[in-house]
Length: 136
Ligand SMILES: [Fe+2]
Ligand SMILES: [Fe+2]
Image (cartoon, rainbow, N blue to C red; front, side):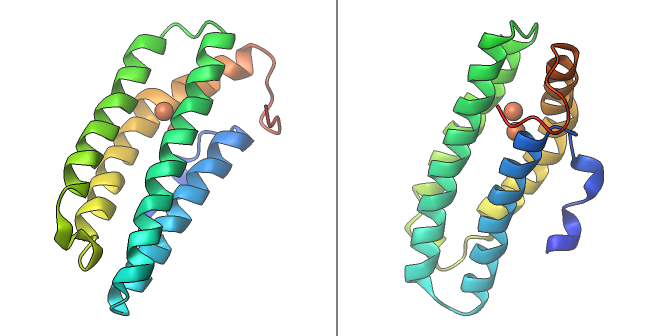
């Protein structure tokens, strides 16, 4: 699965790419544990993913506010919609045995969100003096 996460989805800001990599890492582990038939580990990884993705959104939104990003409202709305849909998927008790819906949903969403929302935010932050290596 890792090959599906292309480097073209990098935004060029260390903290954002680092947190994206961490999220992808959780989903890679989730798929591995699902293939191994380990629903207990899958439950923990699903919970980890939910917590980490929300923390990532909070981090991005704090920077949007701090640096007066022009697209804050639309970007934050995308985050909220993602969490709403994720929570709907999590209502399925069968998810711990077959979590592919979560992985596929994130892959599709992430590809669009990165180009439409995260890359413009990264460019804005660069313009505010946060360089590619900055970790706010
Ligand atoms: Fe975002
Ligand atoms: Fe992001």
